[in-house]
Amino acid sequence: KRCRSKRPLMMLCKFFFDILKSFGHYSKIPSTLMTTAQKHCQSYLRTMATKEQQATERQLMIKTKACQRLAKEMTYYEKEVKENEEKLAKMKQDKTADSYDIKKFEEVLGESYMMIPDSKARFQKSLEELSLFLDTNTVAEGEWISTAQSILEENGISLANTAVVDETNVDDLQQGEAF
Image (cartoon, one colour):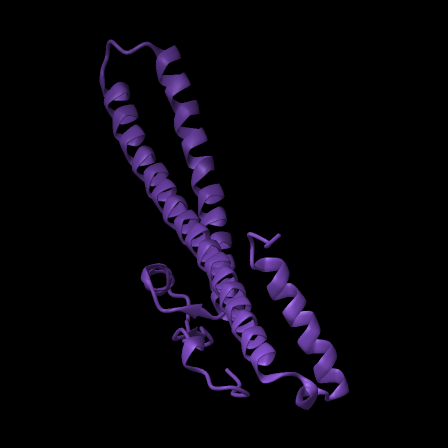
C-alpha cells in the first residue's frame, strides 16, 4: 500500500540524508534515488519554512492587534473621564440634583481615573512585547509588519534593530546550494 501522506517519507528522507551526510557516503547512492529523495527533502524544507513563517506572522498579527485594542481602550478611558467630568460639573451646577447622586457619580469618576494608569501600563507593556518580538524575529514584509512598525513609530519606540527579510524561493536552489 502507498502512504497517503508524504510527511513520513520526507521525515525518513531527512533522517536518511543526515545519516549519510555524517558518514560521507553520497557517492554510493543511485542517482534516481538521490533525485527523488532530494525532491522530497526540498518539499519538506519548503513546508517547514512555510509553517514557521506562518507561525511568526500569526504571532505578529496577535501582538499588533493587542496593541491596537489597548490603544483604543486607553483613548476610550480618557474620553470617558472628560465626559464624566463635564457631566459632574453640570450636576453640581444644577440646583435640583440630589447630593447622593453627585457623590455616587464622583465615585464613578474616581474609578475612571484609576483605569487610565492601568490601561496605559498595559499598552506600554504590549508595545514593549511587540518591539521585542520584532527585534528577535525575522518577519517577511507584509501588512502586519508595516502596521506594527507604524504603531511603534507613533508611540516613539525605535525600530533600529528590527530585522525584515524578503522571502527566499527554495525552488530555484541548485543541488548543494545553501539558502
